[in-house]
Image (cartoon, helix red, strand yellow):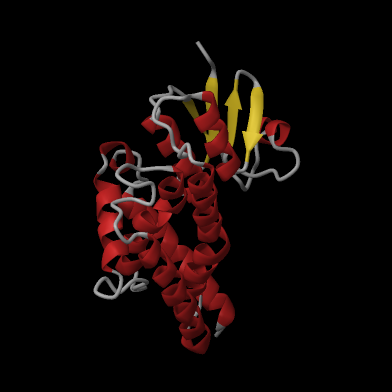
Length: 222
């Protein structure tokens, strides 16, 4: 039997997408929790370049960077394909995954850690980005079609984090303006494999509230 280990931290949405992929494919793995303030020799050994999580270790060979790991998982374990067969559709899935990391995440992060005019500018970026996602979801249940695919796993952190953000007073999405994105978030979180792998809600809310207070305090010291 293949030996599969995943080096991760519990709040990381980058690691979470890898957890989701492994579970969707029914791959057994050992989860190794890392402390990024005191990085383990194992992490430094397996990811000496970036020294970051997640890292997938398969039979002693390490793969890093979450989107790269998703593709490796899909090519290694053929059950429940994450990427479509059609080259164009595969390229589109990769495009939206990259869009999530390059555009959506920075804009939501900006709303999360900023106030005033800077936050308003970040909100405008979020609105534009969600408009693109809304358009892409027309006629679809998931970005992958009728079932969760590569782009859904890459973007799934949105569904998971938006509700935590609302709980600390940061409303990122207006559901009436983005009904398809809102429906996608709800459907995504209903899937048992997704739901059962979410980080502890209260623990995550507490952590996110602390991060926000730290950033806002640094921006406006007394």
